[in-house]
Length: 590
Image 1: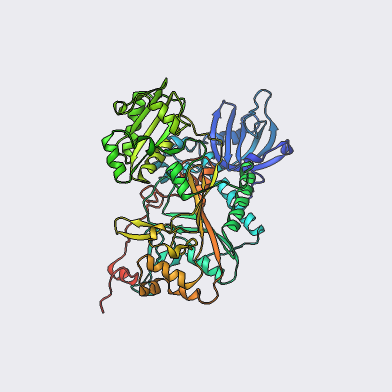
Image 2: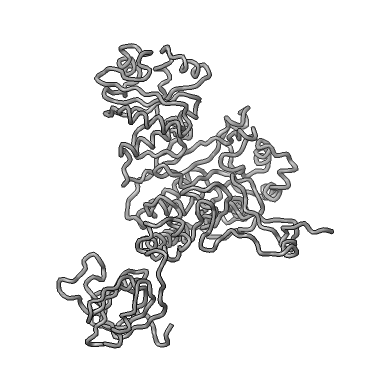
């Protein structure tokens, strides 16, 4: 930077207090208008835009220098703040009443033609945007998103420190542990043939911090998981991690509700009503076909099995004989056209249904592909059994095993909600989902895996259950508008229960000792009751920014194929065989 140049304020901060005073600005050329004797430049920095004027009559040398300026050149200017000519003010811009009469210009760097205009980056391919992410981030909207992220992170720290929590960093290089995804592995040069795993979460470390007596912990932790990607998932992500000793479900939920109320008010200036409503896992599946239901609209799944059990429909009888069910969505005041129903059936098949049944009640008469199997008074029978059924409405039905048929209906419910504009976009519906199953069956391996993680405490009475799939967990998730914000649980704090959990997961004592011996030992040295929760910060910030991809709120995200296009990573290691041996990536012959 030129000697003697010192910025005195920023473009978006010029106010009436600066009028008729000398200031120095720096930034990027956003727009240029050449009117001959006058050249107008919109100068942009992270705070906003300030209009510059170069006057040929009063400063011909600086005017001539300004003739060469083009968009995205980096410049500094000195001059006097003056009022814009009457009628030329821009009421849509905070600095729209002023301009800078420039008497000195510094050109720090010229910009060649860019791959795209940063102001129009939303209209170029994501691949190009991510390759030149530093240009994409010049877009004011992108900068607002990351600025909001910074404010949210500050607010998180502010809240938890005020509530007596310590922010403690835990290692990123750790030991591989079963947490639901594959690990990223790092070879150890100092310990040839041994490897670290990048932490999928700080789960065990934060439990050990409670054993150490810290009582209240939080961290904005970097986590790493090698799993299939989607719009709200990245290989590396940030997690708000929280743990408390001597806590139960009520303690944790009340704290988290206060936190979100504080965050929503401070960031969005919106008041949240406490406490948040709750549904058990079983209730959520039964009513919404999902453990993260969107409760902003009232379309619920109903079990219509009793209505069809006595009807002479052979394929339904076969399903009922196998203990299957038929569930449905009742859409009042809506008679779908045949084309709409065909599109719904296509959607149902895309998400796993073998087919879709539908019934329309039109002037108390039944219209359906199965109408010939139904009695003439079917509407009356249906309304008597299910009083919520109304005339001039459509019933969309899926038959099959439970809960698979309900999961299909849950996805159809969201599809219909969007199709009919039933989902209000200005509501924030928080919901606790509780009483999760402790285990789920992995059909590929025919073995049980922990629904949350293997350190979750079983619900009372678990010892009396004969089958692992019937055991419940002291676990809870917080859901917002159909998106899981995060989940937590009360943890196991004694060795006997932890060993039994490992046994139910198929680990013998030797395997448990090799992988988690340090934890089992710690549980014998005075381990307190404890519980916690963790939230995906990227996903939270995505929702608060009202965008649909976490890539929009991460400074340098990976693509959906886990590629960093800016750095061209991952890439092959340019190492010879001897170097690879040193890194532990080749076997050393003894």
